[in-house]
Length: 192
Image 1 (cartoon, rainbow, N blue to C red):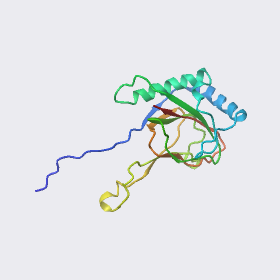
Image 2: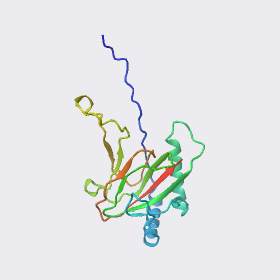
Image 3: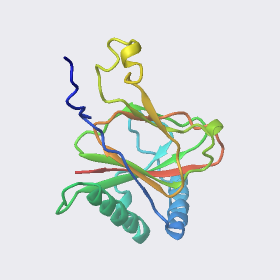
Image 4: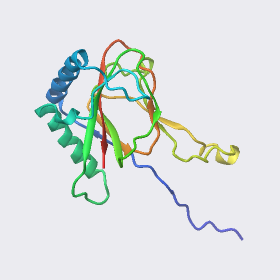
């Protein structure tokens, strides 16, 4: 006789979202990023296109330091166990038409994420969607009727102004090509 004794959901991947109600802070950072993108060369990062600042973004001004504090608080609250402190660094991204990020991970960090200062256009036709890849490398080895809902996939997360996303740095992620002339400004970060 067959008797089911339980089901375990193993290896979940924590992705945490927060909504920040910080319109004045966002406006100040938006202006700052647009100005710097006109006067400071982009930092080449290999797998990315578009303009990006150096990793010193959180030291630029009082506003960028305030955003750093909000992000650090969010990363610390996303844990089951409290953290004493974290090391956090970030960089600004300016998306214009055609900008995208190839699939990548972030080395030397435990958590990574993005905060959308200004999502620009974010409808389906605008593209520029954050994609999170299924971390289970072997999930698609054999596909059939018995596992059709458990095959590898990617999750699409459309950008929203004021939204903060936090995920493990080892999670493969990318951004599809942005298809709008309205600038999109985000801040990416790593924490350890």
